[in-house]
Length: 335
Image 1 (spheres, rainbow, N blue to C red):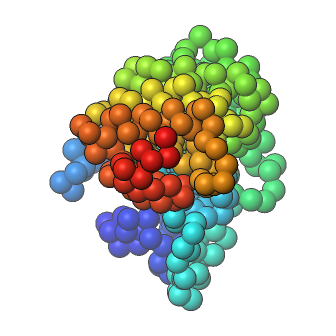
Image 2 (cartoon, one colour):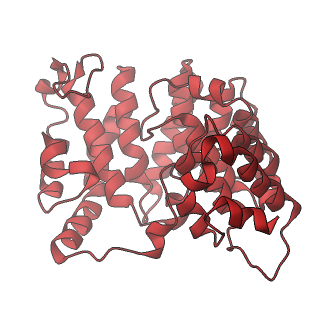
């Protein structure tokens, strides 16, 4: 009911921050050990402790509070769309008050979450990590982040499970920590998670790791049937967004990107083809300049797959955002 009442679809209300402080204060209460099953139609997962769900809820609150705070970080989210930045919505005073209140309580929430990062229960650790990632990504002092990063590094060396090691690697790189040594990890899932951050000490190797994973997207998706903490959707969506953000030019990712578009029967308009198109024309289409070879090949891939998949029609918002014609004939004319 916390979701329905004070965090409905990620919306923040003036009651959200007080509710979050209460939730944080009862995390260590014995009632948190109570096991329960989901009671909503879409919640058909296994039973879990109340503490796990409360930690997950705090993470969702922190993610909502952080949205719009860091544009570069937002653009690596698998659901980011460029037109959201073009037409920012005006917030009323209550919305702004709720947003600032939720941002201001993040240090207190982080204090309450931190002990559970060392829980003996791996499910509790995972939920706590999911909350800690957005809480510690907030602007401000980094002492807590460094301390927590040191704790996660020690755990990464001690645990053997793929899911937990990958989650820890992702947290470290999202916080800007140097994860270049993990780019050579024996587990490809850990390597990819170590390459997901917006900044990398070893950018070419990190990009190569991401592109390798995108060449076999079914295997990449199979690593995490249940999304990692803080993620939704197929894992390949996050990998693709990170690769597009990490590339210094579209040419660096063109080969893999065009391959994804040409398999348009299975690729997704808003989560794969659209972001690829927008990256290829990140400065907007300029009719006074000739298309690059990579841009031309990409547009040809859209035209070639359009007859059976309506890929251009399905991506019209992305074509408009890139300054391109929104129909197959218009795109064909450019070629």
